[in-house]
Image (tube, rainbow, N blue to C red; front, top):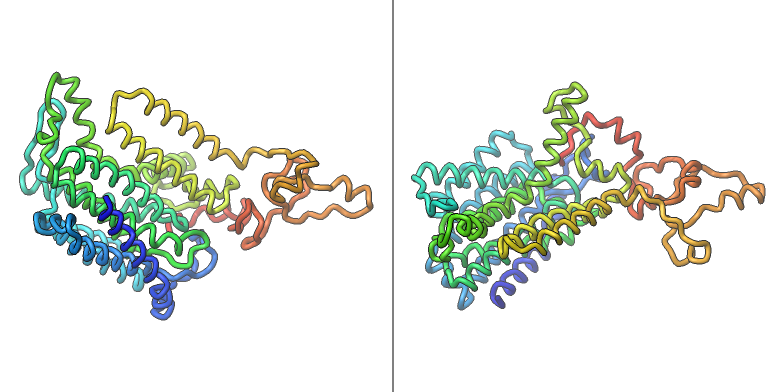
Length: 450
């Protein structure tokens, strides 16, 4: 564990220290696209943050290769080299896209080629565990197609969710943390050395995200761009492929007893395939809602708008940072809920805990709709947005009631005297406002993803 943590820290440190110089390089190189109607940010921000993340990946692999225990991962398996080859290719495509905006079909082809490069070097799914049946060996073409599909889906899921500052890096970090705990348990508890590469990939991925997040949190000073989102998506998929298609579940003595017990016991086998897909859960829900919303309005399902989940959170009244934290919460609930279920699928406490946390999440979603009223004597102890307006006192003194932008979360009578805040005005929900509600509604025709 110490060596995994050391690798994580080195990766995070290298990524963090390189992000500043990379930001300056992106500004000089002109990798600062103009503000589009669909963007949430309001100032030109450089991309190419994936450059620092890629060198953090290289540093993590280099350090792990020189550690006593982790060196066996490189000597016994070709998977780290396969990961590095695929990551270098997908990173190069992402850098070109961040600078020159290459076509989507070219990016898709590059993603498939990067996945194919990893397959050629042995990082592929060889079999699938089927409850009640056992292992089902896959042909070379079946394994290749399944591996490429998983890589492409995961890459594009991460790219799709990269819509707010710090959102993609944080959600992938949460998913990789849950995946690390699962892979380490397989490697340590069952003594299966084949799980070591996946554990190493998860530790390095956490380091990449943690090192980049301080520069990417709202207000972001740099974006990871496609060079970063596609890179971390590929690393996440590589870990899932490594531990699912390479480890023999028979070694874990899962397929034993009755058919019912076998179904429950094989749940941990499918968790590696499910954990990377947890980051797709929120984008998939967003996609379904978008199709229903556009179809209900008589529009094409592919018509772009600003009605996606993160836009909805901002429109409800959440600040930018709070919207990101709420999506972090739901990602952690899904990822660690799946992890808890894999440890003991029959425990009722895990189901109850997930249900209770889901209720908490629903309350957080509706939090701006509540208007707490603080007692007069406690107003000086609370933030300004929870204080009562002194409109009545001002009217008695003869002062006119102004229609200035008032802090969010005030009583209803105060909201009647409030005009919408302009874009860039600080103080709305404790953060910088992105614009008025009417302004958001008028721009629904723009695309939502960055």
